[in-house]
Length: 348
Ligand SMILES: Nc1ncnc2c1ncn2[C@@H]1O[C@H](COP(=O)(O)OP(=O)(O)OP(=O)(O)O)[C@@H](O)[C@H]1O
Ligand SMILES: [Mg+2]
Image (cartoon, rainbow, N blue to C red; front, side):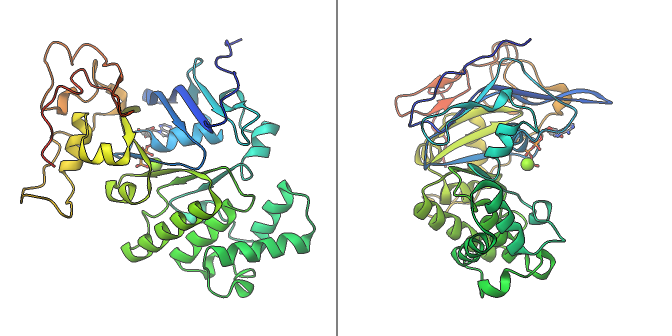
């Protein structure tokens, strides 16, 4: 039997605590490591933005939290995913199987999830109203009429026009932006303490994206739940997050408060990402940089620091051989780089 780690009660001011989460997949081509020792914390009511290029392990990490990993996934034995939804009872989700009774009671209830593509979460054959009411009735003692009233209230909260009519609409009868609002209503059906939003606005046009972001921000302020907001768009993170975690090849390479990450990034990867996006109010005119090379194939992750082959500051001896430790700074910022804090300030 694998040893249980870290099942201790979390303090009240920590809602979720991931320690050393590892996930690999067995495939015909061999074993691919998608998440390689991820640790992060989410505090009640805060918005944690997770940024990283495609394939960096953002979705696999949250699937591990929800216990919705694919069948070919293998998790590291040492990790822990502690969740403290009400402040007084800690669950180690890492120990729970996909169909475990406890996780089924938490999913959709204390943890809500919204996805990039609403059709993957919404049933095409049930009306919006019945999908929300059923979730309410599954987790809360309520009559059909009470659950329907709650569904109507939620549709109004997510600012869908004419909520009474919307209750009986089917997902295919709504536009993309309306479907995303309906999915947010479903995710909020039971007042979760944690909402996981995995690229919820990527498939939308920019105007609708801005509206959905505004909606999420106002709901967060009103209801006070914590949000893990996953995106590859730094601009979106700046808009919504309190703290940011930057992922690269299955690792968190930098975390910190959103302003610290934006104005004083310490990891060369974060610096390069920020230099590659246009910024309003920029002092001098400059060309946008591109990050040289491409994300390495996850079957062949480079030794040492996985970013060394794309980094302008890499030391041929140290960075190619030794995996850098996470270095902490007084402002709470952390960066996984041998030279964090010693590099020249990036010109952003
Ligand atoms: N079931 C699976 N079998 C094999 N490999 C998988 C499986 N699921 C994910 N992966 C691999 O794990 C890695 C991380 O995937 P993940 O979906 O977490 O990336 P992501 O950061 O969410 O990217 P994106 O921004 O494109 O959504 C990728 O290399 C992906 O191919
Ligand atoms: Mg993803």
